[in-house]
Length: 222
Image (cartoon, rainbow, N blue to C red; front, side, top):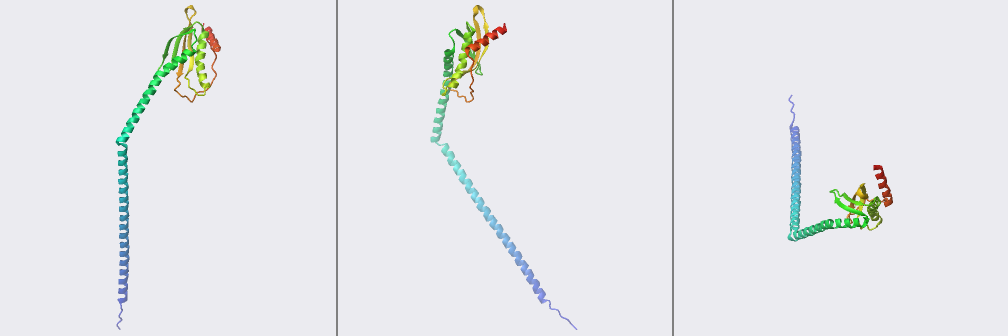
């Protein structure tokens, strides 16, 4: 007895499966290629946009550079520099000329008639040394009190337009021949064109109090 098996349906089914798999592979490949093309196009657009932005920025920079370096702006800057130099020169001249004049004027206003100033010097740090003679320690004390009061008057004045002496101290006083006292006073002068925000108020000693201190110091030294 002969048995025949028809394998044709299995072959057809296998072929259909292979065809389906091929279609799926082709679809995936085409989709992948399409995605690559899309990404490439996006990158090209980004590159083009970046190049355009760089070009625009470069052009704006060039335009600004041309405007800044234009003849009109250069002339304005040169004129401003001349004005600033002239202003600096005036300020320097004012500081150089007015400070000594104001210092001497304020000094002459407080020195008693019986006090003689023989030497006046100033260090690089601004410390002023006043040396001279007087017939009495009382007049020297009045001189010191006058210097101290210039700062008090400054503090009591709302507009604060006057220069003043600060840090005034008696370095020494020595009784010499014929009853003449030699003295040395140190102080600093703040001219009227300098503005200070950190000044504190305080009471200064009177001439009588200073005179007593000087007399006590001399008695202690003896």
